[in-house]
Image (cartoon, rainbow, N blue to C red):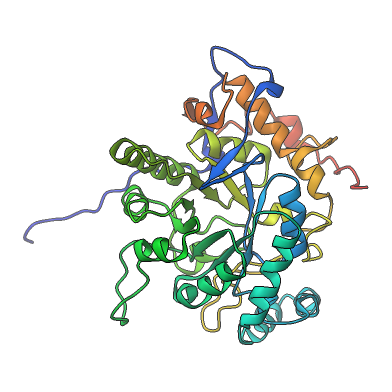
Length: 386
């Protein structure tokens, strides 16, 4: 039989598999600092809105920016293909479940218009907030200079999996070190889930890393491709790469855990695992300010040949401010994310997110069910969102 090789598997953990251990010292929640820095910009809210058309319109980006967060506008979305993107959004929302994917494929086939890129960026900038935009690696060389010239402050290069080394037919692909020099704005790259890929990306000079492959509520990459790593393990690995890069170079590259979080506890676990901030999509789709009218879909849903996303119904049951800051009467962690972060940090004795990284995590698959028989047996209706 020759040399026998058997591939071994290592365990990997998601949000429901772990718990945060309280600290030996506690801190009043109001004394915690939850700010997040990306390049020269400091945000009082460590939460980004994903570049989903159902979430981040220019108006939504302005609203979140004024509350202290950052929303990323998709340069390959409906806002840069149509003068009136909301008619296209309405068509997607009104389509039947069986027709939705085909409708999106047709609508996203329209060409990207350079003039609309400038128009959307200027709209955000004129409101006085930081403007972040995103494109796939394939379109970055063309779209990035247009967006930056129009005033974009942060550029995100995003695809299902992005690496520093990529083999293609192109004699010269996208070289991040050159892009950093050319654009002269902070560049965030994603997505990745491993130590080595994250560290190689950091070594190109980029300013941030997006962590996560396939955990989003509207993403189907894990079903379609079978690819992904649970978010806690992915965050731990990329955070280790960040810390090693800091030791070697003195340069800190924040990591942003992207996707898979629907409750305050998920966000707290991501931060405790090493994230400097998180990126959310579907939770924001629930807000009155989101343009999707209670629906959300992934960036890859409109792919012409292999959609890796689906339209999901979220409903509209909250506002942007209540989602982030409360007050809330809900007991399921679906509102007041910042309050949850501050309280968890206080229970661990952490006054900053960097200190929160030192909190202990334990493998605890029963953490959400232990002693909760009555909660699991009964169904409590959610309070009306008024």
